[in-house]
Length: 106
Image 1 (cartoon, rainbow, N blue to C red):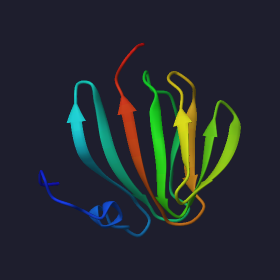
Image 2: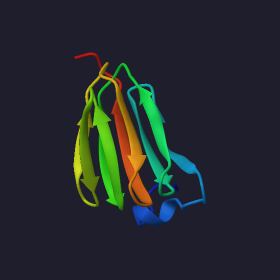
Image 3: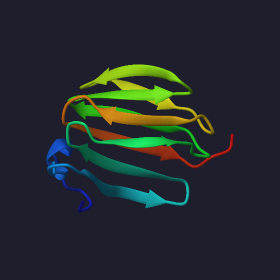
Image 4: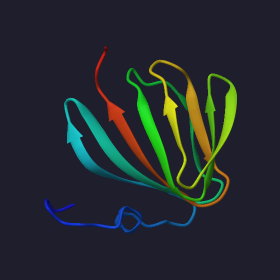
């Protein structure tokens, strides 16, 4: 994404049939901002990360599981994925999300 350019965040990434697509917007040692587009039924298997991650659903719906608890997260909603807690997700519909990971151990 070029600097000082206004963009529609949803248009910076496109769906691909049967796939999960990602695009890194910012990557620094202090954190990353990544866009994802999930086709319906696609997902990420359960895993952990050493840092907190903030998920913003830009369109569609996802079922997000954190430490065994499931949450249906919809367009314009957010959820925090706490550090070191197992989490995974599955697309209920096609959905796009913005993932912000802060690399701090505070």
